Image 1: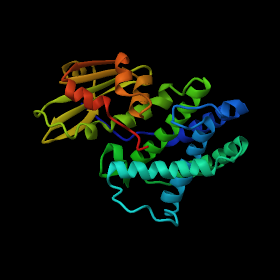
Image 2 (image 1 turned 120 degrees about the horizontal axis):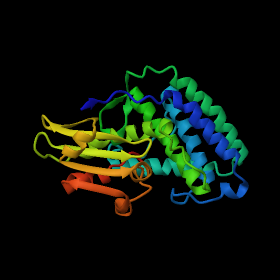
Image 3 (image 1 turned 90 degrees about the horizontal axis):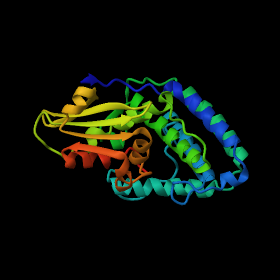
Image 4 (image 1 turned 30 degrees about the horizontal axis):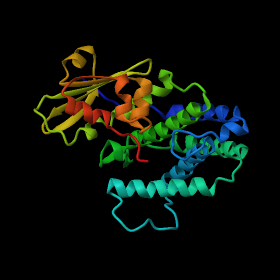
Length: 283
């Protein structure tokens, strides 16, 4: 297999933000009130959530500031507790900022988008960064942390585009890095499966932004590489789906049962099931 290298997303932040600003500036007041796939949230709420992601990232990572209020008692290393905590923070922000006008939301997104780009440009992408929980419990390199931040902004912009009937940023330049980052969750998604050494699981995403990723079982653990047509056919289990289905499925916008008509499975179904239930967001 071809080894997987760092995902280059740093240069995408200005263009992604420019596309978001252009999108939001094209909306009328009724559009801002449209419901999105994010339960209970309108377009206005999702835009506020994107803004909160920027503010939270710069506060935590650039400024080392985690807030003046302590998190609730409990072990936040437990996924369910962490999910509850993050959902509560997100909803508190969206509710509290609900009176911010759409023009001001756009102004803030433009300003802080510049701050994000400036700060990320100072990072040592090869250093150890924070934990990307859906890809595993260990510290991830900074480039992966940055890639995760890019996927967050990209997929929430897609939610707004979907809700308002605007075409998505599905060109390879914008979408392949997202899918490549999501695929890094595959070994972690398979961690509870312990088949024979040499077992391989292939994820094939079709479309202009698609690719083939192969998870291999060796020395008691799973590793990930980039595959080709021959390795795809030879895989113990393989899952094939189009790029639009892939990003929705892995970000909980589509449940596996609803995605079934867009998915082709071959080989071991238990391993394929792990792939289909792979999640690449926290909340």
